Amino acid sequence: MSSIPYRIYLQEKDMPKYWCNIRAKMKQLPDAMLHPGTMQPCVKEDLLPIFCEELVDQEMNTTDEFIEIPEEIQNFYKMYRPSPLVRAYCLEQELETPAQIYYKFEGNNTSGSHKLNSAAAQAYCAKKQGVTSLTTETGAGQWGSALAMACAYYGVDLSVYMVKVSSEQKPYRKILMETYGAKVILSPSSTTDSGKKILAKTPDTGGSLGCAISEAIEAAIKTDNCKYVLGSVLNHVLLHQSIIGMETKAACDMYGIYPDIIVGCAGGGSNLGGLIAPFITEKIQGKNNIEIIAVEPASCPSFTRGKYAYDFGDTGQTTPLMKMYTLGSGFMPSPNHAGGLRYHGMNPILSKLYHDGYLQAESYIQNDVFQAAQTFLKCEGILPAPESTHAIKGAIEQALKCKETGEKKTIIFGLTGTGYFDMAAYNSFNSGDMTDYIPGDQDLQKGFDTLPKM
Ligand SMILES: *Cc1c(COP(=O)(O)O)cnc(C)c1O
Image 1: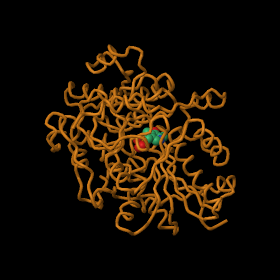
Image 2: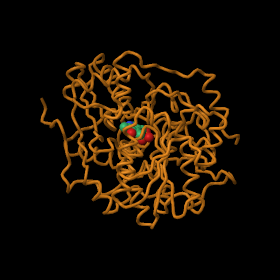
Image 3: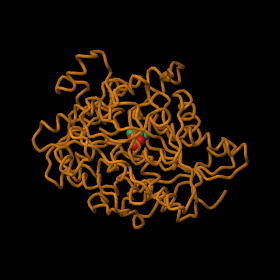
Image 4: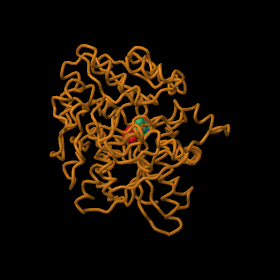
C-alpha cells in the first residue's frame, strides 16, 4: 500500500481560517436574485426583514474570494472538525478498481451531517446581531438537528417546521431537536396562513420542504426580533460549506493528491458546492481539469430534468426569485426515502456552473443507491445517510469505469453524513419493499406549470 494514511486529519494549526466564495472567480456571475413584488434585483434592504445582516452581506458578496471565518465560529468548528479525508482502500479492493478513492466524511457530529457547518455560522450571526429567536424548516431532519445544536450553544430560541412525512419516517430526529431545546412543528400546520392554505387544498399531504419554508418565513416575519434561516440552496450556505473543500484541498496539497473526479450528492447544492469550491475556482482559471459530478435522486431530478429558470424557493411563492435549475416550486416529490434531496430547486451558483458546462449531473433510483450503501458499509464500516449514498453510487460507477479502461484516476466524494436515524429506510430496502418512483414527463409538467411567467 502507498504511504497515504487511511485517514488524513489536518492538525489544528493547519485548519482553514477562510471560506471560499466561488463567485469571485466566475467568468459570468449567476443572474441576480429578484424581488417577488417588483421583479427588480434584490438590494440588501429587501432581505434584512427576513435574514441576519451579516448573512445578507455574504449572500450578496461577489468579489471576495476568501472570507475570514470569525474566530468564534472557528472555535465551534474545532468541536467536531477537522473532518477526515479517508482513503477507501477496502472499497477499492472490493471493486477491483485501479482508481484511488477518497471520501471526505462529515458525519462525525451528533446531528450526523455537514449541515452543522452552516448552522454554526448562522446561529452565531443571529446571536451577534442580538436576534433572540430563529425559525427554519427541516425535511429529513438533519438541518433541524444541526441548527438545534448550534442554537443551544449560542443561546438562541428555535422553532423548526418539520415536513410531516419525514417526521413520521424519522421520529427520533424530532426528539433529538427537542432534547436540544428546539420547538418542532409538523408542516403543513395550522399555525400559519400558508400552512392552512395548503391543508385546505390538500388535506392529506405529507408536506414538502417548499411548504415548510413558507411557514417558517411567515412565522419569522410575524414574530418580534426573529429571523429565518435556511439550510441549503442560498449562496451564503454554500459559502459556509466551503470549509469542507478548504480542508479537503489542504489535505490533498499536503499529500500530493490530485483529484481527477469529484462526486457529491446534490439536494439544494450546498455540500457539493462547498466541497468543490477551492477546486472549481482553479478549474475556472484553467489550472485544473477536474471532472465534477452532481448526483441526485431519479425521483427529484432538478439538474438532470429540471428547467433553468427564475423560480421561488417555496411553495407559497413568497421568497425572492432565483435563477436556478428547478422542477417548479409546486413540484411535490413522492414520499420515498431520498430525504434531504427532495427539494425542487438548486443553488444558483451551481446552477450557473452546470449551465456553463463546468459540472455534470447524474440521477439514480433508490434501490440502486441503497445497494451501493450496502457495498460501502460492509467494506468501509460507516452506515451512510441515504442522501450521501447517492455520492457513493456516483463514485462507484466512476471507479467501475476505471476498471474497464484501466485508468488510475483519483476520485474524491463527499460522504455527507451517517444514517443512524434512517433505519426505516434501510429496513424497507432489506425487506425488499423499497419502492422506486421516477416521475413521468406529465408529473414534471405539473411542477413546471407553477413556474412564474417572466
Ligand atoms: C441535507 C443533506 C444533504 C443535501 O445537501 P445539500 O447541501 O442541500 O445538497 C446531503 N446529505 C446529507 C446527509 C444531508 O443531511
